[in-house]
Image (cartoon, rainbow, N blue to C red; front, side, top):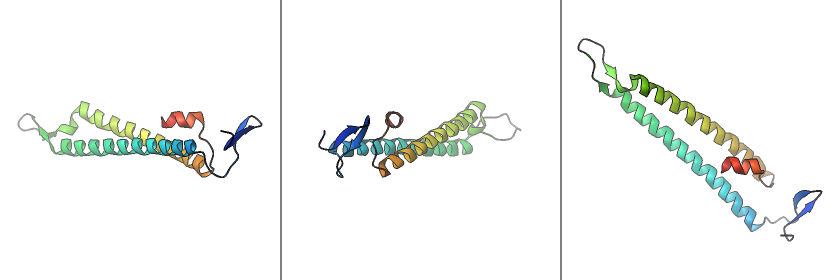
Length: 121
C-alpha cells in the first residue's frame, strides 16, 4: 500500500501520479452503480407514463347518461400516479445530487467519503 499512498497529518495522501488499481476498480463500481440506479428510475418513470397514458384512454363502466369515466380518474389510481411521479422525481433528484458529489471527487482525484459511498450503495 505504501507504494501508492501514505498517511500524513492523519490523512490519506496519494504518493504517486498513478492511481492504485483498487481505486480505479472502486471508481468504476461506484459510477456503474449510479448509472444502473438512474437507468432503473428512468425505466420506472417511462413505465408509469405508459401505464397512465393507457389509463387515460381506458373507459370504465358508468351509468347511462353520465359523462364517460376513465380508469385514470378513479381516486385510488389518480393518487397512485401522482404519488409515483413525486417519488420518482425525488429519487432522480437524489441521484443527480450524488452524481454531482461523485463528479467533484473524481475530478479532484480524491477518495469518496464514507457517506458518499453509502449514498451510492
